[in-house]
Length: 405
Ligand SMILES: Cc1cc2nc3c(=O)[nH]c(=O)nc-3n(C[C@H](O)[C@H](O)[C@H](O)COP(=O)(O)OP(=O)(O)OC[C@H]3O[C@@H](n4cnc5c(N)ncnc54)[C@H](O)[C@@H]3O)c2cc1C
Image (cartoon, rainbow, N blue to C red):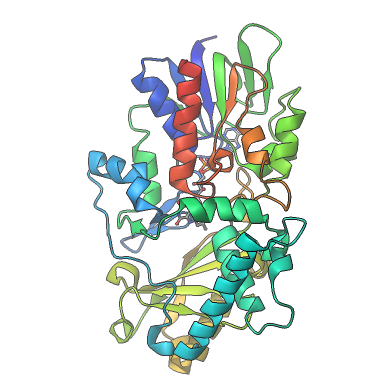
């Protein structure tokens, strides 16, 4: 049986960051991935000649995002066109006056979170009862946090907001493709789910359906929902499992609609929110990169509803929302091209992590090792850059460096 210095479990951004760091430091490292491909929640699919990101698409906080440099290293071009999420194209269905009112309501909500937070650390308690913009604030929270404000920790939300910048860039060839490219040259075992880590001997034994692997050290980078479900039997890691349960994955999903006719009637990279008065609504980027598609995203309760409807049901919903804004002729012009259902992905089970009210400190617990040979990494371990690809990557690099001593 071959023994490795380190085995990294999970081939997403964190696992690739960890394995790359260890490999570059001369360690004999194996990256073990349950799925048949690398990238995890950064996943690019190639459809009709386009690279579509079904998971992460934006290099958030580009000023301190290591993927900017990695993209240059691998020859991936970046598109620095900033997102227009805060604009409603031609004010359709959301007038400038209403947008201003909604933005004011959000600013007042965030001010309460900072200056006069309600007891209990529950963001939703700071909403004004009966406000016409409560549903909109919850919809925005769904996109950003994967969950509405009722289940959101104030401390956790603000930790992210304080660290993030407003500079978001994209990769036309796909963020998922870029993440996978960073694994070039690494030794990888795909389709190999680790089911248990046996810590009894001096060497760790990792059980998989394809046999047992042996390593001196391990880095675990699976999502919090995978950890909390006990998909990997760890033994003696109750604090880690409780921390993972306090950092559940919210929901986020993507949907791409092909524009079969009249694409040039829509402005490239313009944005529409489906319905500013409904928490169950999509956010639509028209013709990203000038392509003949509309990219829809659903978050929180909206994503939950779309997962129940299934991909075609979600596409029908999106097309109806767009027809209500753009006119009925678009019903025949739009069709489902591709979409995600992250809550049904066996080895992920959701979108990105958020702390439950009162549980923001769980991120630190998750990143603190119980056994000095085993480290945890992944987006949820980042205190301030969780729910992102760059945050995940940094935790992987940090875990690797910690093992390197
Ligand atoms: C729809 C959507 C949109 C998003 N948009 C953005 C965005 O624009 N920008 C951004 O920065 N972030 C975005 N994110 C979040 C980002 O994708 C994640 O935060 C990040 O990719 C997580 O990386 P990770 O390595 O922590 O986890 P993952 O990517 O989940 O990697 C963990 C890996 O572990 C594997 N695994 C699970 N169980 C086992 C096992 N037992 N054995 C071996 N392997 C296992 C999984 O298959 C997976 O590949 C988005 C996410 C979604 C879902």
